[in-house]
Amino acid sequence: MTAVPPTASTPAAGPQPDALAEPTRRVGGRWVALFGAAWLGIWMAQLTPVQLLLPLQIDEHLAVSGTGAGGTPAWTDSVIAFGVISAVAGVFALIAFPVTGALSDRTTSRFGRRRPWIAGGTLLFAASLLLLGLQTGLVGIAVFWTLAIVGFCVLSAALTAAISDQVPVDQRGLVSAFISAPQAVGLILGVLLATLLFTGQLLGYTAMAVLLVLLVAPFCLLVPDARLHPAQRPPLTLRALVEGFWVSPREHPDFGFTLLSRILVNIGNALGTTLLLYFLMFGLNDPNAEDDLLVLIVIYTIFVVLASVVAGALSDRLRRRRVFVLAAAVLQALAALLLAFVPELTATMIGAALLGLGYGCFLSVDQALATQVLPDPASRGKDLGIMNIATAVPQAVAPLAGAAIVTLLGGFPALFLVSALFGFGGALAVSRVRSVR
Image 1: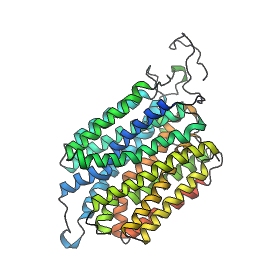
Image 2 (image 1 turned 180 degrees about the horizontal axis):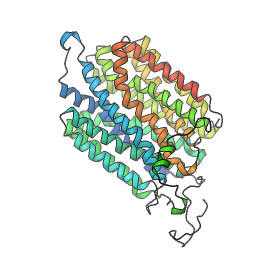
Image 3 (image 1 turned 45 degrees about the vertical axis):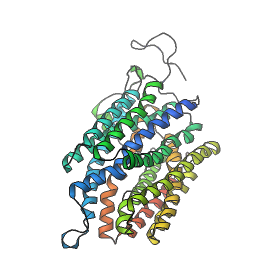
Image 4 (image 1 turned 135 degrees about the vertical axis):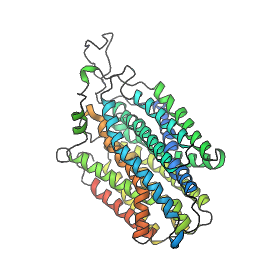
């Protein structure tokens, strides 16, 4: 690390770590463990509502059962309501990710650049979940889920930037695995807790909120965060913020292709997974849909964890990112094709395994790839915030888009075919990256 010369607002007592320097010291096991625990809390709080609590809450409000008037499948009413609420939250996520990333890039707090945003995002996320658990109307559900997603964006934008700030390039694949592996574990653990221990709407949301705070707090309190000194701060103007949203693909083609690949793969993944409960219930007519969903999540989790850790570490060792991301995108597409052409439970379980392998590899290695194509060290938070849009927004719009595909294009096989096309498109896009092997 280099030292920053003292200024009028910079203490002169000893050298100060440069917040903009490229990190060279490897992070230790304690750092990685706290980082992984924080992400475990984040994913439980975000994915458990998406996969279980929020659809059931909406379903209860609409009192959906059987078929509606005129022979229209009543489940589509629930999916459309879920999709609209998710889409509204997605619009706010589209703004929150880059804006809070840009603001954290410019934060000169004595607590560091990222830490205040990690703390603030956690509190907003947790409080919104608590209030969401009290809602019985669609408007209230939409408002507080949107606020929860904004808190998620603030928190995850700052925490993701910590990789570029503190982790050297040759360790980023392994460290990024501690974003993806907790995602899979958090999903299954959250669903288990919400179905077996903290049952009921309010108790389920409360449990997720409390666990979020308990798991993020140690990283926020115990991991140092280099302070940005005022002399290093980029201008903070509305024009600078707005212009910063645009990263020219002509000037930075590898950033553009990595972003495009992430968008396509995440749309494909979201289309293939977000309506999985509805696929079991209405596509396979599975009488044990909720129990079988848990089995699928377990299978998915095992393969995500294995793939993310092994592929992340191997990509560090081989110093290759692109080939891993390409293979991951193809695997996800193959899983979707299997579900499209063999719509039965055993094939769905095999598909869950393939999807876990592909998405686990993708999440860890693609995150490491993204940190290596950033245009400017001074705007890491903002640029990674733009990258994070490609993860959060597809999840938000997928329920509504998926419901439209199922309703208008021929049912669940069409949904999985579209998912596969997006996966293959993501593989093609990442093959165009040139600066990273």
